[in-house]
Length: 173
View 1: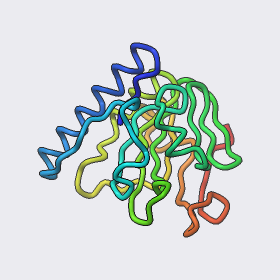
View 2: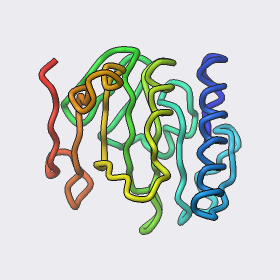
View 3: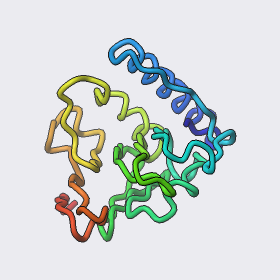
View 4: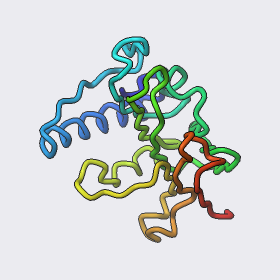
């Protein structure tokens, strides 16, 4: 579900990224994806259906019902993973969380801080065979020139889906 409560630039990115990913999933995986604007999302329907959320806590109204208790929070200016906080308008963040109210469904999040961080997620090939990403990754725009050195936070949640019982690493900057 894509954000509709951001700036025109954020909303356009969310719609076009969701559409691109849906078409990629259809073409590469023969899958069918519904494009749903955040304001049309009903968290009580289809609880066992996985969802992909595009945007952040400031521009996607589905964030609160799906990710309110998540240890990963993203706004236009910061990403917080547990007690680790990174600020800036050029951070991309991808993560996965269990969907509230379901024992089997997950919420995949493609997010970023500011338009630069959001657009940075366009460079991540999430729907290709063999893509290996951790449960949560945060990287800055300098990843385009520095590669893995541009990563700010990366790791795996514990079996209880907490940061504290997982394995995470972060840069000191």
